Length: 70
Image 1 (cartoon, rainbow, N blue to C red):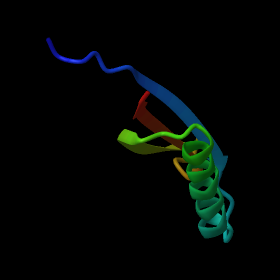
Image 2 (cartoon, rainbow, N blue to C red):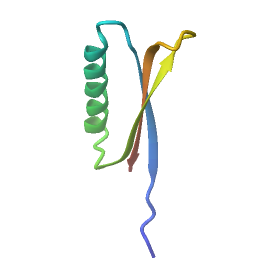
Image 3 (cartoon, one colour):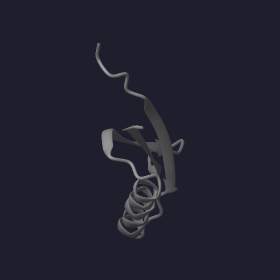
Image 4 (cartoon, rainbow, N blue to C red):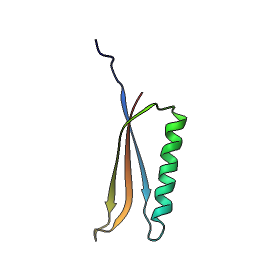
């Protein structure tokens, strides 16, 4: 019989500001890497990014979803 896998999902978000997006993305990467290390995650199943927009269609934020095995 196959081993049962337990998959969890964690969502992270950040605001994107003009001329600061690269730093905000680096901070988001750092936050996620810290989460992975602290939770001792051995296997990441999926990472997905999507942007949030304002009424003009401009990107104002980023949502990153991490799916991992426990």
